[in-house]
Length: 196
Image 1 (tube, one colour):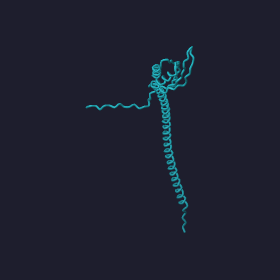
Image 2: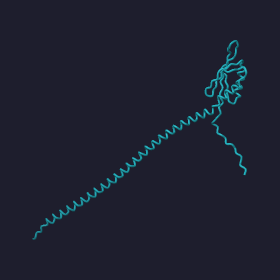
Image 3: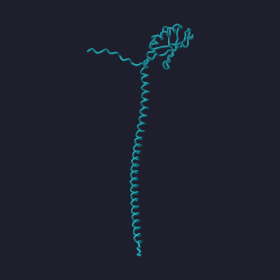
Image 4: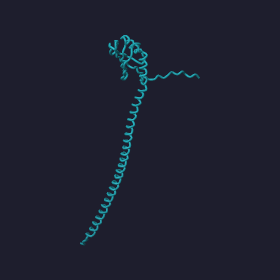
């Protein structure tokens, strides 16, 4: 019987299979490294893009914060100017009060009376004076009540005092200044239809 020695053939085949295995392993490793590199590059690019977007948003938020601060500052200035405007309008509307008050006191003051002092706090006026009789104080209060610029006269005190050799009456009364109402809406004038 002839014996055939297959050991070299098997050894060569085994070496061939090992080479094929290492080639396949190297290919798989190369493909894995390529996939890892591509995934890493893609994710790094995405991360850089997101970081750039975040930086842009941060800069825009900082700009908006500055604009909000500017708007708040402007709103404070507007509120301050509106308050000043309101004070000026109030002063403008009430500037004739003193003139009307003194004019009405001169017009309404009966004979035999003279004033010692006039003091105004807000719309309330305190009048202090002397009169020959108490009836003249009542006449003054009725006259003040009928005035369009003054309202609600109220007698606080009347008492007899000695002034030199004569006895007269000293009185104190309060009266309110009737201020025009500015809250009423202005009425639009009715216009006549145009003739054509």
